[in-house]
Image (cartoon, rainbow, N blue to C red; front, side):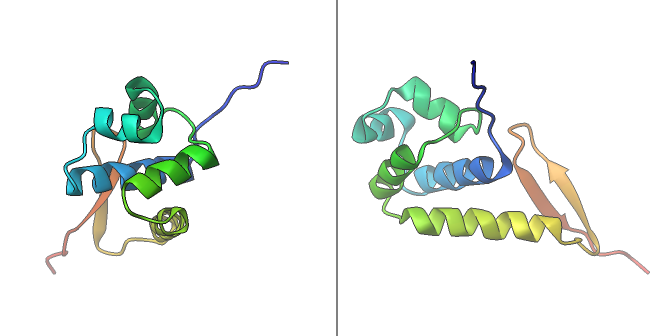
Length: 109
């Protein structure tokens, strides 16, 4: 039986957190992939949110970026929970990498 792995919203948010952490510390994909012991191609798919990240890989990535796996998951869960709440006086904007940004726009009354 063929199993198809899909990437859910939690994985996509964790991937966004990883990308942010990489940018913050100026770590490129090649460096992180080497540190974690996976190919740059695999890491690229993971941080774009197009490939599932297994728990061991996530732990290694988080360790390499100086954060706890529980912190990454908690932050992603909080972001998802907040996205489910209505954004009063706001409009959601989607950018090309499917990352959701919220920009607050005050209504002129």
